[in-house]
Image 1 (cartoon, rainbow, N blue to C red):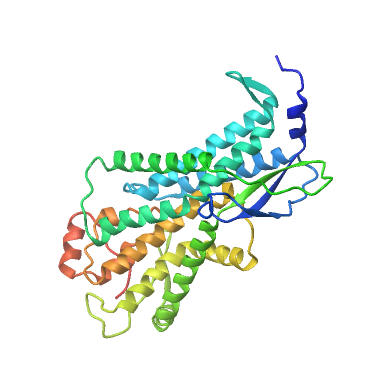
Image 2: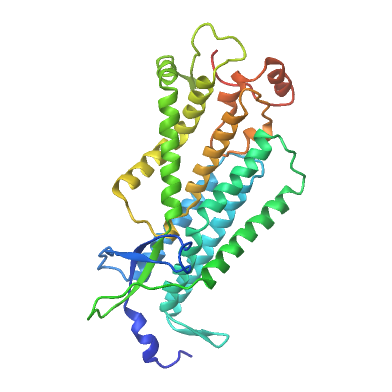
Length: 363
């Protein structure tokens, strides 16, 4: 039976969901400071309905990304991070949808109202906001050990990755719940109560770093990229479109030159993620404020995954001894098509005998 309306909770029926730009909770006494960002005026829907629609769209996007992946993907830390993020997104959607549907109810003696939609989403947004760098650095270390240092991961790697990802989520949630929060002051005479979402600076600065690195790599091998573009050929084979590139005359097997491999890595990376790179540039130019519950998403993590693999392959050159596990660590980019021409011919022949498909590239 629904309880009688309590004046203490009645004020939360007019919540207004807005975004607040905030620095990470890492300075001073650990307080989160921010400034208000004007809310979007969606007069036709309640704020909680808008939030449910946004997170529903995010969950659908997660499902599409997982469906579009290549099959037989080898285990990696970033892959487990993506799965865990999709699970948290679904749990968040289920929780706020249930609260919105029942409006006011009691669970184990604890009263839950529309106010808790705001509170729960704030907690998740803050948690997402402080996980950008941990996911990026931990996955970078994982690929550095497996690709650059060729460290063999035991068969129980799945359990290790699962335990480490659970540790990161637990530490992040604990950090958010135990940290004091300073709410921005509302204007005098304001009749509604605002739900302030926060934007982590980690995602912004990490995006700046990635875009800057891509531009530096592009400028470094500009002439090689132009040569590749001039030799570009598009063919049709077995109802599939094949893009072929020819290296400049005089290059034997294996192909030599650091600029050549950087150019091929860029082609492979931008061939898949160029729309996402353009989107990141637009966000940076406009200084768009994206709430934490949308800023951290599965496509963003897979974008970081491809970037880290490309960087580690570049660091491994010229001692490239890449295995099939390395090639299948990325569910979206076939790195074998740009890596095999730079490997020793004997090693390539051995890899092909072990079931590695040949590269589709004209040398």
